[in-house]
Length: 396
Ligand SMILES: Cc1cc2nc3c(=O)[nH]c(=O)nc-3n(C[C@H](O)[C@H](O)[C@H](O)COP(=O)(O)OP(=O)(O)OC[C@H]3O[C@@H](n4cnc5c(N)ncnc54)[C@H](O)[C@@H]3O)c2cc1C
Image 1 (cartoon, rainbow, N blue to C red):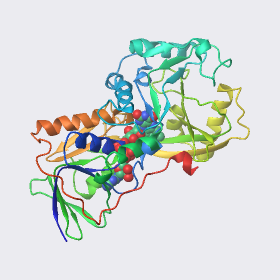
Image 2: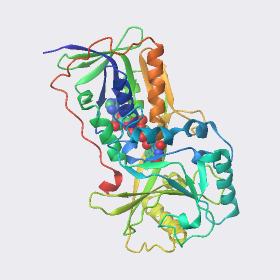
Image 3: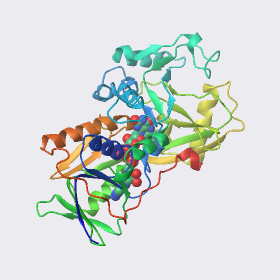
């Protein structure tokens, strides 16, 4: 039977931004549901390296940018959530590493980069004594190694935990069977399904990553635009058991580490390195073969004690999706564009999902949207649950 269901908020997109927001709003007593068109985490979130940055990456040029200030408190925020004491319960999420390292290698320039970065962030970077080097580096490297406050999360378990916290509020949407209906004033009135069921909400929130622009275009919204910044990540499957979590800082005065390495394991338990940083940015302009060659030529002299002769190499291309900036550079922090009862959001970094959700919550509270004013309706039977996406290294 066709029904009209009323909510405080209807979120579109089940990446980290939408899922975190759903958790925050529901924890505060708001009736909120999430609609995902594909799989939960599909897109950038499941492809991310899972690093919760404290901002050093953005301070490598030596000055404290607004990006590094916005992000500096985030590792502490996430750590609280991981122990169950934060604003979202992440006790089901696995921590891959409780620290991250920065290795300026031997060049004077890169040492300077690291030093200036550490000064800019004051107590957030520690120089590691050689006896405390992680096993992977022990007895192999000369010079300084820095430990950052960053942590690394296992993203599939993060997405799973965020979804399992709110199983009754997450649904799969088939846009062939549903459409947004606009108000005469230009806001969104409702989501209408072809069987006649209608969901009305006080706030409609788009957290659709790279899917945002087409959702906007399909509904003739043009109050904000999206930009894509392509990356081509490299995956290396090998037999090196010790995990590695390190930014290799380049010789140039660059804001981006030359290579950023995180270690993962696939379902078969095989170790896989996932490589980002400048390598992945430049890699987006290379063929797969060229990029693998570049990566091999970079890694072999960096880690002469590692045997890559039997390693399997692969690449994974994906775009970062952000609010458009005139110069196409990365936004400094989260982005929220508003028109009537619609908010269009990009967290810019996985790290900043809590920040995005808190800002939206504040906006809803400022709009006098008091939580729990209407009882949450029962979900209609025809709505299904989306599955969880799998990582690039699982498919490789
Ligand atoms: C390779 C890579 C590595 C990264 N590493 C890090 C890192 O280590 N640390 C960090 O802080 N950040 C990292 N980032 C950035 C981070 O991943 C993103 O900022 C973040 O995941 C964006 O989350 P999101 O929920 O906005 O978008 P997404 O994760 O892209 O999710 C969007 C979701 O919306 C769904 N969707 C799309 N269109 C529609 C529609 N019309 N209706 C319903 N649903 C829709 C999609 O299927 C998807 O599930 C990385 C990004 C990339 C690409």
